[in-house]
Image 1 (cartoon, one colour):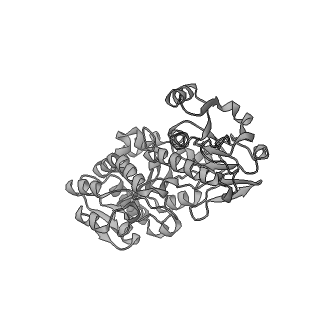
Image 2 (cartoon, helix red, strand yellow; image 1 turned 90 degrees about the horizontal axis):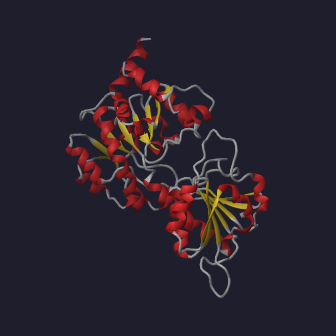
Image 3 (tube, one colour; image 1 turned 90 degrees about the vertical axis):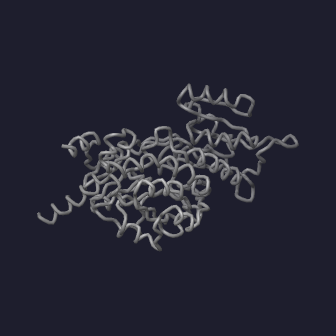
Length: 389
């Protein structure tokens, strides 16, 4: 039991650590096709000026247009491997989930702040609980939505249009009206940040769009914003009536992991043209689109029931220069709060940050992961109240 007590004390020292003592690390992303970086030199400079030590892996910013020398000039300590970042830092700042090749680097005193996507990744959650670290899911902490959501919609829309071209198996329609032949027709499901991003790409190119949402206000706002464009807007209940006419279908709805229904069922694929393509930008496996499963940029398209699916789960990674600028800026206030107060006290002071608290000291906290994985979890308010006693 003495060893267990030592581990708990070690964890608590990091969880409550703050006031310039917390060491911050930025490893290079190892997820295939991921070129974003969680902090840029401007954020490093601000943290170093405040007295923090920041360690950055060499090459972490390369795909985002940031040289190692820029981080060094900002005051970062540069190391050659991710293992060194994890070994020296308490607070690990990332973009994507912890990958299996990073598991051996994890320590109980770590605070991981990244897009965990834990509900759909039981293996990652199991490892975090086994280690006993604290993880905060960045994707749950954005009060106004992720700054990368719009980019996902814009880039995803572009990729879908590419797949409409005949050489890729599409209908062969142009995205503009020419010579009396109608432009391609797209269905956009969901009019939040991702859907609005998709509309920006599609409508500016001249694509005929039918958009769907459950919220009447979202439908009205969208119509007013794009009133001079080739756009029709419908309630989501009308979706089935328009599937057969689509050249490309974009899902932009984030689907709760514990729901077992869908907006597009496997049986619905029989209604589609054989040249239609489904682009699931939100990319919840078996979520809004029953036949969706995550793919990578190296192998982005698969076929189910004769219908092509594009389901890359890190679409903004294709534009890392822009995506990193938005992501790093959006995370920075939370990074400073965690560094100053420690992870748990930061969650107590920030309800938005608390929404992302996934696990700590071997306890699962994120409700969505608990419900989806059918395992016990401690509600976040209960955990934070108890741990402050």
